[in-house]
Length: 86
Image (tube, rainbow, N blue to C red; front, side, top):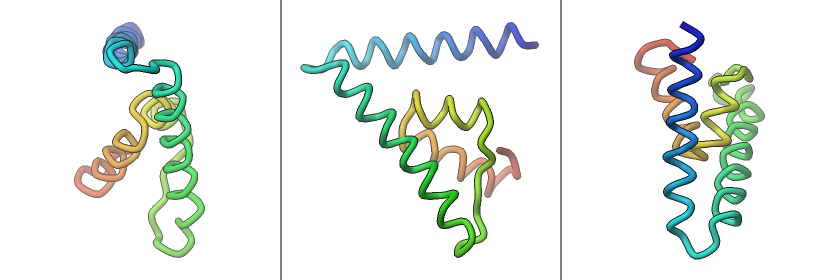
């Protein structure tokens, strides 16, 4: 089962790299998305004492926030609310 997750993560990285390579400044876009995702994850966890919503900091959450950016964090929040996951 770990092999399937590794393949899925690799496919995600390739898709993000391909999309970034089509931009004018690919490295800057990737870094901006990663920092935005980490900031969103940090903001959710910092405001968790006020809102009651937190996300666990594990490999899946870190991968989603760094590779997918803010949409990855939003997806984790939706999964937590709808399915009780993450």
